[in-house]
Image (cartoon, rainbow, N blue to C red; front, top):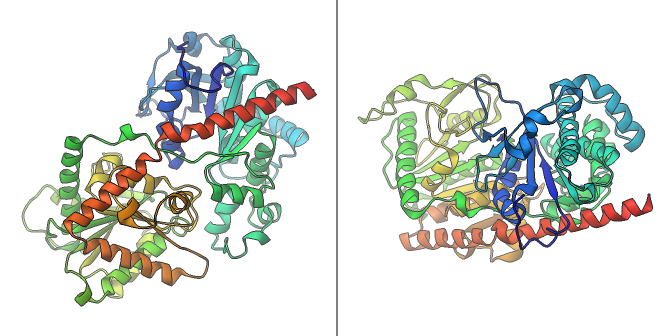
Length: 561
């Protein structure tokens, strides 16, 4: 295996295996966490680093992020004899660093789950009786991953005392418990990117912050029908040799709802190589702006000028948690701001979040490449939805338009699909589209970290976020709260200041809309400088500490037994 240096515990780690549902499977922010930190970890550990993900891609549509190479890991994919009919594929993750990846096909584990659940109840008190939805799927993958970890370590002849198994989110929690039971000499790390109960409290419209100290995790799990996931997450947190959280915000949440404070906070960094060079960036900015302006012009029946301000929010489609509600209401306030105090520059605002897409808007798709005057499409959707009458974003935009908003200088377009470069309308990947934007807005109500604003400033796009995100709190604790000083404006959010926060967001958009060219350049430069402080090369030291804690605690555990 490749020898590397400058890793404080490299002499103690022979194999670091990290499991997540989002390895080579892009769903949300955890994919970004793992894929951006991989290069730094691989530089330190080489092929002693192995990611383990789910093999859920059909043959006719393989993962675009996975490059299979059967000869890796001593041809483990063809020579390892895994139990219970488990099958693996070995290759490399097509990201900077190209780390080793094992994809696990875990279907054969479903018949074993009742027996496994019984063991987990007996050994760790995990209550799987009330499970439903994706619980079985997550647990089958988690246990399959742990089995692969154990068998791979044995197959490679690695000393179990120098093995670390790293598990992310509740979906891999049962894997941690299985590994601890069947390979107790290995050290384990469990990372909470959120808590099941915290997310559910917010998703159900309950006030998280005003009554935070009054919430009891086990009680709320019963009230919200989350007993199994909460029980599993809590057990994994307590049983891990090192429990980590991605922000101080989440650490406090874990302490309150899981009855344990993480030993280490591991803030999420970013890999600068994801950002293109200046020439490519300039081309992407021009192409992206032309495409977005054309889409907006067609949908709104007016030719939007090249100087139109492009604003966007993006991420997971959680209407309240991600602040989509307050974003739209802030835009409505922007429309009503006194025109004598602000310039007449148009604002074209996008909601870039995936929803239940049916198909691209046919006429829009047909006319996108026609460069005459924009025909009138009285619409705000780039794609038809299967549930347009109930989708929260669609309903709110429609309501605001019917009440006279978004018919003047502010226009809103909802792009309800993954920007993978092949959606039928935008046809530009998200990272390639980011340079086109002038400002992003991420006013989350619940956000353990917040990758989207960090991605934005890494691409030189100033952003507005909230103090209810881990990233926002990191900004507030380390920089002056001014968009010209750090490229970020942090808006205060509570359970009772919605109107004040919406007004503050609207005013910040107006300020940027009216900014001079010099001020715009200053804000963009400040954004890039701030993002550089979140480079994984700097933040990886927190994981170094977590690995040390895990190995120390695992050693002490072995001595006691």
